[in-house]
Amino acid sequence: MKLIIDNNIVIFLGNFYLKNYDLKDYNNIEKNLLKLLNKYSVDINGYYNVFIYHDKNYGLIIDMQKEDLEYLDYFNNQVELNIEIIEDSFLYEIEDILNINKDILINFTIYKKNYHFYLETKEKINPIKLGILLENSKIIYGKKAKKIKKDSKIITK
Figure (tube, rainbow, N blue to C red):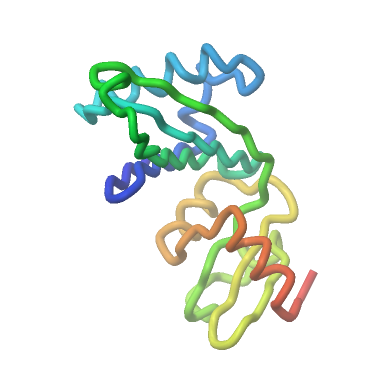
């Protein structure tokens, strides 16, 4: 699990953490998300748009964007979450593809754009290979990943 707090709150949850998440039950998602934020002492209030990107090979990336409402006193001590679940395929940005073992690369479609390489999983990969990949890459998701796939050259399928 990885938690980034800046303008947005972004939570990276691998499949290992998803035993209690039923992506069809929004109440369950909201309850587990609030419990997770409370566990790590992240204090939130107000109205949030929550985009949950689901990649069956990696897990979830939860992007929470606070909505600045004019009548914000209404939500002063409350939390309201507008949750949207998006089925996605994440890309892994690699600067130097030679640092990645070719046994790992077999499981990926490789895209090249400018001087960067992007890997997209073809099938479920084992946790050890995923760990090595995560140590050597940056996860790209959402609209940015779709744009990269559209604008890049496919090197290998």
